[in-house]
Every structure is written in C-alpha cells, then in structure tokens.
Image (spheres, rainbow, N blue to C red):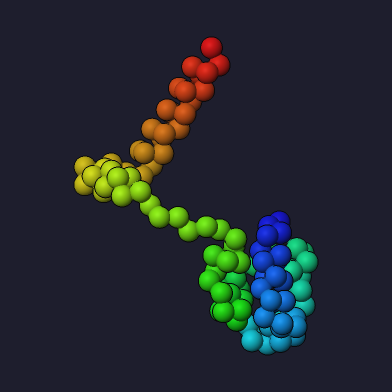
Length: 109
C-alpha cells in the first residue's frame, strides 16, 4: 500500500486548514473514504487522486510526491529517430534488458 499518497493528502489538507469533512465535501468523496486513504487503509484510484488534488488546489504530482523532470533533448531526438525507423517500444525494452543482462554477466566474472 502506498503510504505517501495518504501522507501528502493529509499534509496539504492541514496546510489549507481543512477538516476531513470539509475536504470530503469539496472533493465529492465520503469522509470515511478520505480518512481511510489518509490512514493508509486503502489506495485511491487515479480518478480519486485527481478529484482530491483539485479540491486541495494542488497538482496531482504533489500528492504523488513525484518530481517532474525535463527530458534530455538528445534522448527525445533518439526516440523520434527510432520511431521513424519503425523500431517498436517493445524492441527497445528487449534490447535494454539484454544489455543489462550482458553487463551483469561481465560484472559477475
């Protein structure tokens, strides 16, 4: 169970001086459901996370506690070229898995 989401929701709720009742009313979810999320008893769906984030007036990323990183332009270009050549996503995954396996075999020697 992801405890970070519940902690983040509670942190932002308290920061905005909202009670469970008030936030549940704004978000359109039951107070008991919101409490169970904050107490790590249930994992909310993506839809619920979105509704709660809107009610708290924070980006979803804040609740997920994730950092949005900028993509390296060279990697974006490389992926674009691979797509133009007809290389599929699964082919790239298989290649990366193979390369990781080769590297681990070399390190194991």
